[in-house]
Length: 431
Image 1 (tube, helix red, strand yellow):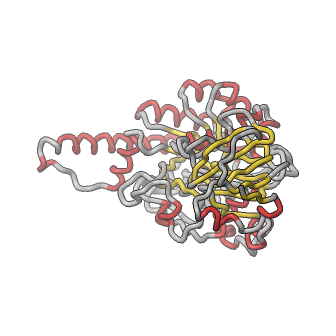
Image 2 (image 1 turned 90 degrees about the vertical axis):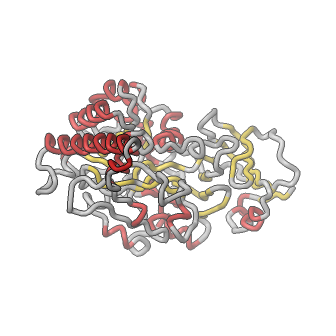
């Protein structure tokens, strides 16, 4: 049994070991599996990119395992960011307010510095969105932050040409109220969205009719193909919305057309928490530590997550990077607890709840046997302001290490490390 002490762990020693598919056992840390109680002096065993076992210090370790002593540290599942704009991509243009055919996947740069920044923050799974300057700005993409040279190497889906590789981004409120062809009022915004869903129902009827009469086959329509995926529940709508009246508009639209929705931002969700709970709509919220931003978010409250939890709503966190820097995502849980969330639900909001919102909870979000071995090693308690991410592992491979100078600069660097951050704007890149 090969033993590696914590100091040695900071060296790139494990990569050859992992290449041999030898099990690796991390011992001595407090392990938060999320699906289960924290395990002090715990053991995490991984092999072949998956979790093998999580247990107490007495857990049997395979005789051929490499043992890594991480005493005094904390292990969490890799964090799941349900709403981000990393990767340097952009979505729809100004030709129309609704562009369901646009795929942010086609604009992601897998070598963009922002992906390393997310790893420095402990994020291993991310929902990358087009911006919110449109009522529907296009298809999001769910990425696993492996080290890869192509976007295909980051995808969860296996067929990027024909498969569903993410959700659909929609928005209402002030972002999409602009000069024509965009709507000028909230009422017109809702009307245009309803019109698009009605058109999709008509397209479905034509497809069904063509099954009996091939001559009635409609021309291929990329917009409508994506919309039918939404209506069939195979593509989740991630809906940007802030004010309580805008949230209720989304819920009416969802009730009318029956699509699956995750409510994003929901600044005033606490004002309609019971209505959100009744609709069984998950909420991905953002917590920020400084004032500013748009007028419709003026009622932002740390109490939002706690009140939603009390109402029975499934709550997750997101960064909307660059609104919240990905490196600071972990502290969202502490802000949530400050506002009334339980410690258990606050950590779940960083991990398993987000995985559920992306339909990825069978693979990520908790440290459970057979799930992907995505985890982070922290210097201390996850709710402490003094705690920082020391290492990030994806599918059993170390992909970021604070002791590596090249990696460390992504944890502490600024403009010189992330020059592309200056290109973000509130409508095209964030929120």
